[in-house]
Image (cartoon, rainbow, N blue to C red; front, side, top):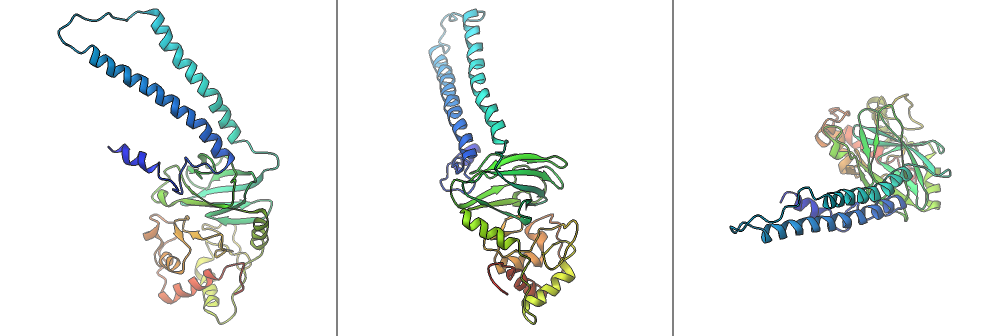
Amino acid sequence: MTALPLLLASCIEGSPLDSLDPQGPAARRIDELGTPVFWIAGVILAIVLGGMTFAMIRYRDRGQADPKQIHGNAKLEVLWTAIPIILLAGLAVPTVQAIFDLTECDADAMEVDVIGHQWWFEYRYPEEGITTANVMVIPAGKQVCLNMTSEDVLHNFWIPKLNGKRYLVPGQQTLLTLEADQPGEYWGQCGEFCGLSHALMRARVRAVGQTDYEAWVARMQQPATLPADGTPAAAGLAEFNGICSTCHVIEGVNQIDKPVGPNLTHFADPYRNVFAGASLDRTAEHIAEWLADPPTIKPGSFMPNLNLTSDEIDVLVAFLQGLDPTKGN
């Protein structure tokens, strides 16, 4: 009974984390491998259960003599040893080949570095010189090669509709490929328990057309647009410099060697529509709730309750919401 809700939940159409709805070559390769395995296993299960049911009914104890025993029958023992070996070998070859193929990047693949943190994903585009968080923007129809590692503990990067899981290991580099057939938003989740807020360590991949991707790169390469003097956002900038600038970086505002928190340069870009480990929509209300006490939203958050006043929160929200490279402040 416990497994039934989980089984039914996996069959919900349109679920953002539906691993049975491949939307890219890598996920489709896994689906094409898993589907025949499922049906072969189903047939074997039916044969075994059917045989057991038949034997229990046909040979149930009715006071008759013992039926003929098959123990020591060499032909049968060879048969039921050889059949599983052939089946497993037949499944192992394409499975191992797929595992290697899905972690090999094409020579012309676009590179993105993925760094796992407790509890958010950081994305660096080495060729474009871009650093962002929570939402990875990629061009649709283009293979993306992910060079992955972890800053702290073991994480697991998983975008179910685009590929399977792969570990992010501190001190090591792992590879994974992503490619989306069509523009769209694809949800992800850390697949390895990594601490108190593991369930809130989510991810989004936004695939866009090539023209839109190039426009996004161009605006992300620009420093933040600073607010006009005398505005609430300008007061928020002053608060940022006094409180937030030791942990966060905003290009054009401050620079630190190893920021603890996400890069906030273009925090309000239209594609970056979530924050707090992609667990909250980027609305003014959610930003205010987060600033008021981060650990109540994300237990164990490294960002503490800074005891900000409501006025400080209001101006910080105005400043952060103004970090939209598509608009002037």
